[in-house]
Image (cartoon, rainbow, N blue to C red; front, side, top):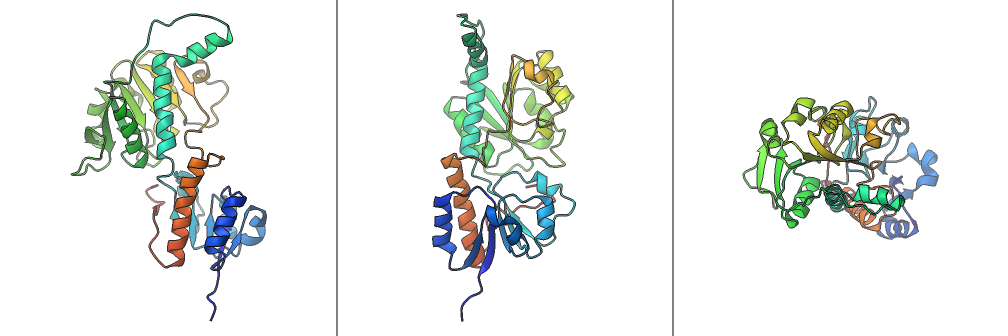
Length: 321
């Protein structure tokens, strides 16, 4: 007797080569539908791979498992009508390399004034800056010691920095590349000694507003702030004040409290701020390294689901991770 096929709707970016890979690996066990079948397949889909809208989830009456093509799940954790009894997994681990390279690039760009030199180049202005610094020897406080935080620590350690991790629960074994770990309740003490503060935390009730103005003032004066976690960790006004008053020497911001950043925000025009539009971990682009990592997780999980095995990267929407 033939086994009943599972209906899979794939909404994640999926080129011809990837479609062929899916058909070859799972075509005999699954009915595979893609973006162009979106409306017709929603009501049938047992599995969705990608990022459906809340309205679409309401139509997916047969949905049992949602495999996100993102690492962050805050948009789904906040949904009022997320269907009950649907298993959610993400692709945590797919972005550690590319985002950590962004972090290092941003720090070096700020320390060496590349933004200023780029502006001078456009003006055909040959002028040297008096100020520069090195990553070597800096104490880097990393908020979050998961895949992203660990990748950041690895690359900073290679530059001769001293990574210190902050996590909710301190473990007996120290993660590789970190020189120390601090429980989040001792965050204030860690900030006092930070030359660089890097946020790698997801958006949860506990992390929202964690970096208050009072906490920013506890940082070593002249510290550099890098945010590749979520913008909800700090209010724009507090960040602007700390930058204006030189409590922070600068900031590298890929995520912000409000996105897109309002046109009238002072952050746009601050020479000591490097802004990018949430691109540190580009999940919906043709970056083959990232796409390969995303699909490796998705394909493995699909195989595990079909075989009745436990899935990897399961998310608890109540905690947000």
